[in-house]
Image 1: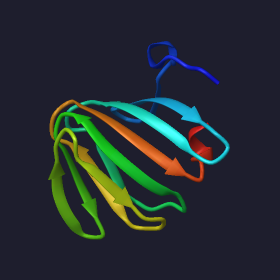
Image 2: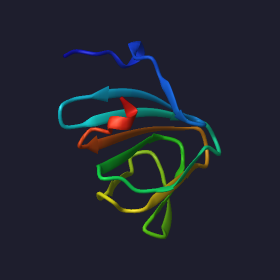
Image 3: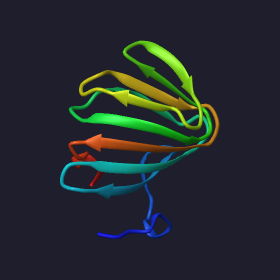
Image 4: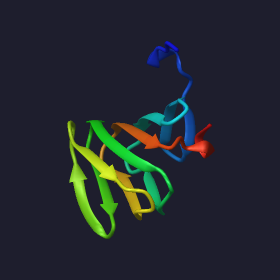
Length: 105
């Protein structure tokens, strides 16, 4: 499979989160363009998640600990760990999930 990020149509998965999604047998990749002040409510899921901040400042609360992340920061979120977030600026994020996020397909 060969894809070009510029040619993938984004989906607004939740208000302010525009994702270009790529799925394999064992992973999902979500390339997010996130609007300033867009929030992700507290949740958890069976998927392990790795978040990479590409641009902007993103505030993440993971298991009741809140931190602000900047370009180059990577956060590993274990399966079933409660987390929420807010874009403090417009952001570009990459989330990788394993197994794939079926609800994003």
